[in-house]
Image (cartoon, rainbow, N blue to C red; front, side):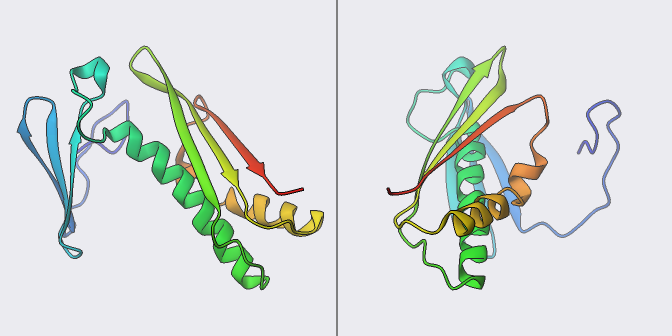
Length: 147
């Protein structure tokens, strides 16, 4: 396992709750043991995927959208605000086999005061997935509030 891009080093052994098995050409099955859930994954089209299963880049984009909304929702609960029903549309742009851009458009279900909207938008960007994205990757997050 590599801990750094430039100098692969072994990481300390830890009990694993998740595993990924390469089961056929450009296809894996990821398992979360405690939840007893699996996700079939395949390479994106550029790597020979057939478009029948999610690919790892889909999960990165969906993970970002989900994380932004979860952190925003936690902040909303703390302020006694309701954003149940918020929806994120996510996408990405690849360049030279790399994620060049992640796009998230979050549509909120209720109009809130400008101050509350700013609070929630700012809070959302404290999500660990957002913070883990390399600065070379452009991240576009749009919040759409009802008028």
